[in-house]
Image 1: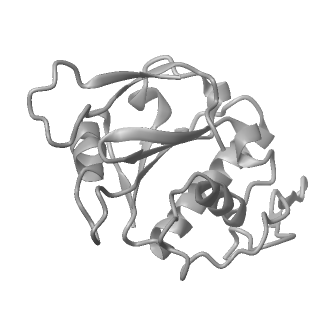
Image 2 (image 1 turned 45 degrees about the horizontal axis):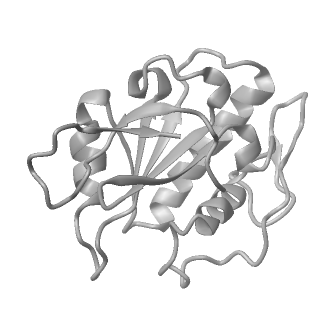
Amino acid sequence: EELFISRNDWSREVNEASCIRHNGNDGTWVIINLTTESQSTTSIQHDTTCRAVRQSIQSLATKYTDIKFVSIPFNSAIENWPVENLPTIFCYYGGKLRCQLVGVDEFGGHGVNVGRVEWRLKELGVFDGYEELFDLEFDPEPDVIDRVSENRVGRGGYSNNKGGFGGVSAELATAQNCNSEDDESDYDDVD
């Protein structure tokens, strides 16, 4: 289940939660989706893509129940985070940011669907150890958006009707070491 958090919840729900040992692993994956609020982003197409990522996260949260999925409004999570960097997903493990998807291009362009998000997270290593749940054989084709009705028409994999780093700098709260309680700073510079 997807959990909605505020900036005040970040340390507990992201940093500390990603340090929890699970099934013999050194931590737990925590996937953070930066969301838009009711305001528009840069275009209707951009809004549609951000909405598709959000729906994908909700779907993946019900499939991968051992992974924690959280959502937070982008302007609450990181002050002055550019709306053009949405959609954005941060992936924490063991108290640190391990990988991220920033911007439409890193999600495979417009026409995002749950299969495309799942494929990219698998490429980043998030779903390693979950092979029994990962049922895609290829990166699904993008959905086609019917511009009149704004309905999504799935073309490959499965649609949401049922990687690397983005090169942007952000200051995010991260625990330096899961076993250390006296870190000097709770922040890392992330590029």
